[in-house]
Length: 136
Image 1: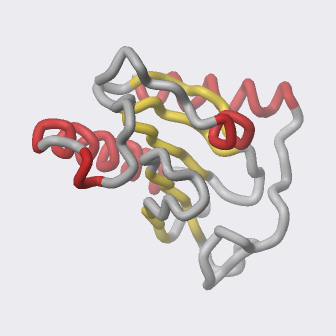
Image 2 (image 1 turned 90 degrees about the vertical axis):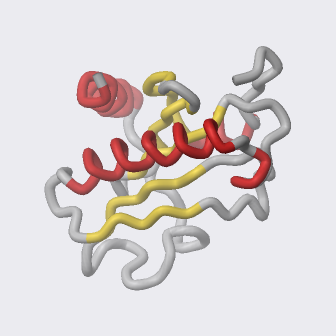
Image 3 (image 1 turned 120 degrees about the vertical axis):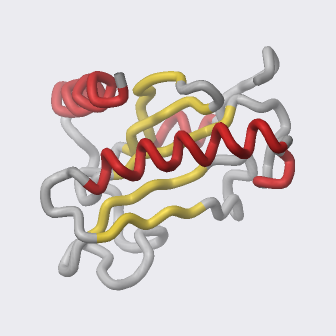
């Protein structure tokens, strides 16, 4: 982890903080269309998986496994998509998205599919608190 970690402002604008894991900041994407978590390793300058050392890669994989299991348990989730594109936001971040047949982007990817439907402020705070308690 790095004392120089700064969250990309675009990630901050599109998501809300849930918790800090061993390596990553866990965030909830502000889009009611999908159950959608984001893991952002707190490693200064990391843009790619290969920028992490072996220990950091193992920590991120463990965090991905935990978040994916929890997301898969969400009502209606039939498929979990995991992606780390970084074409627009270079800071290393991993999306974990719960999907189901007939969702707003099915069967295509969530990126570039329509416009995000933001949570009401109180609903967003409630969802973040729920995730915070589930992550323990």
